[in-house]
Length: 210
Image 1 (cartoon, rainbow, N blue to C red):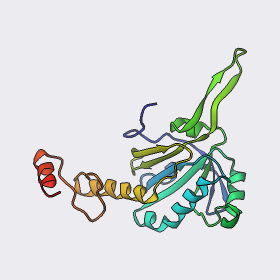
Image 2 (cartoon, rainbow, N blue to C red; image 1 turned 180 degrees about the vertical axis):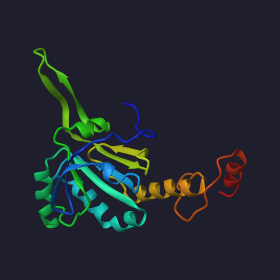
Image 3 (cartoon, one colour; image 1 turned 90 degrees about the horizontal axis):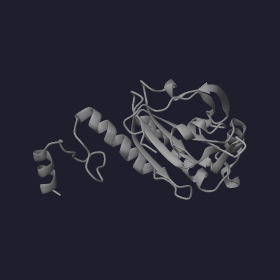
């Protein structure tokens, strides 16, 4: 699989559940691009174990994403009806009630496939019938998309490995700092710290102080 970083985010139009319970047809990331950054992340399945911790953790930090002009959007291969039911289920019962950002239904698995996070692939048997090899779910892929619709950062974890929401925010900060100042962000850079100019002299100056 080739990386999507530096390329336009694959287009899709699909059904999504927004605002914690409203089913919307023909939802697209293009609804936000040009005006907002987008953090688009995949998770394996509704009503599982690691997944609610991630979706709720994104909701807990949603104000920080909004302050940075970022729209968070989630996606799995479950149906919109499964998403809706999960969103109505209390946290104590394994639900994600309180999550307000959009959750896309990728029943066909084509969105996950186009983003390179589908945990398997389609093939044909000896009779020419289409079959699926692997697990019909998405890995924990995450994509940071800029206002031009270009993917600037991606990370893909295997299913047991939850992601860091703080690291996602750090990457948003790094991208926005670079766009504003033209300086590049070194290892472990955090908002408020000095970055460096992408020249030999700039790198030497930075290293001399660390």
